[in-house]
Image (cartoon, rainbow, N blue to C red; front, side, top):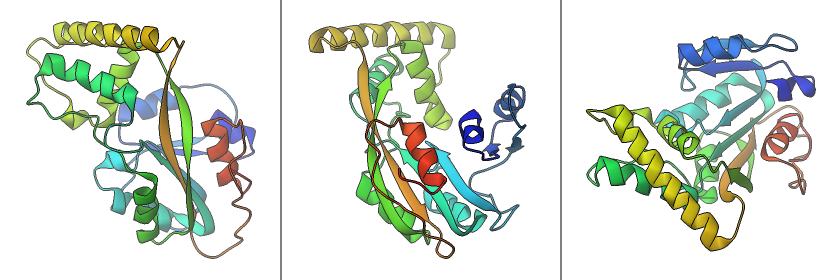
Length: 238
């Protein structure tokens, strides 16, 4: 929300988790945004009340992407803008493959992996159009992944908590997964002679019909993923 405030926007955050909302409310700085416990699939407490909606790795993770996008459409004012992100396909790239291999090496191949939520850009655009949006476009974001096995495992679990494997001894299983992933990360970095892992994400941009179309523009070279998203939502170039 600090990034939104830097552009003069007042953010409203929505999260299913009371603990996450409490943590967000406790962060200092700037005009206090509104943080609500809620569901991205049910945003119509304020119909047509928002200038922009951002959903960062949320739409697919709700388990009902079409409904989530329809709710976002209904929450926007005419001409309002949407930006949402997802991983580009079922695996999300090499980083996710490494995480999945580490998880399944401990959990067993019979477990359903939490790493399987993703869409190609064309499919993500089609899903957005089907929710009623216009001027739909997408771009590929290049991201640096943390070479921290514990952080990567936590990020994977957050994608789909219901799919997270269950263990009799969760602490021991986590240690084993961290060790397996640490070894895999080390081997990949050493083999490719790189200092960090890279992955890609898809960002979809769209508008609700009506109002001022503004300038969708092209991707601004060198801009970071968050800057691109915010620039689009504020009506400038992505």
